Length: 323
Picture 1 (cartoon, rainbow, N blue to C red):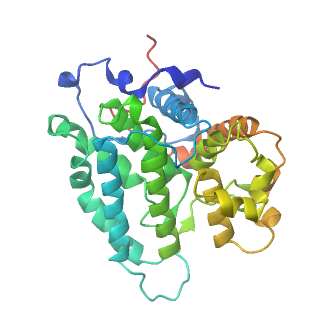
Picture 2 (picture 1 turned 90 degrees about the vertical axis):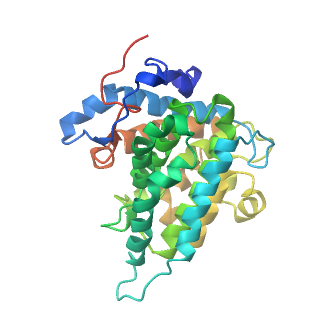
């Protein structure tokens, strides 16, 4: 399960010395279903899944309240997300006939579109300024679609790709692993939930009750890893309201369950059937392994999700280079 685990992301950009690195604006490369083979063989796919699995290993058995190192780069990323949060407060929903997809989201998004490079420049040191336009594309892709006013796992993947790129250029380092998930990704989730609620965003390509969740996937993977070998919380406990209320501040997985129960009405087994089935799995390590398989099959190997993924010099479409 942890094939990609022992390649710390920062090293993977060492093939070319940074001085000769030609950064490019990422663009879509997967235009038809047969192109999916290119994606699965690509350096981008190998680096992306390696990054997800490295973080999965890094947070294993750890609570959100665990003491971990917080670097300056992590603090700056949190400040960037705080700015996005503040812009939501400054852009209230507008009165409109339809309940879903509030058009004020487009105003909020336009601000990010305009400011993305400036925001990323606050995180990236000046000697790496040439990387900013490339990296900023992933930030812009990570908050939903302004035409459809929807959000889904492809947008979430763009945020993970954004963080992966920051590792590849050396802004984030191996010892930032825990903080990447617990501090940065967790803050990103809070901002996304606020966007989804405030502007009543539609789920992008949702499979309804047959999907894992309308909006997210990664916090279930990393959140289940956090719970591996927990002394008393078992998978069956996450459908127990009391267990969730008492432990959600420590565990990402339970925070996700809490959000679902706030947003949906009716019996859990009906509105979240896949999660209900997962609660019958005997151990968290089996849940974790199953979710990684499911993520590959339901997100990373689905054309409707990957057709929107963009490839540049940091996450390249070319086949994996051995060595």
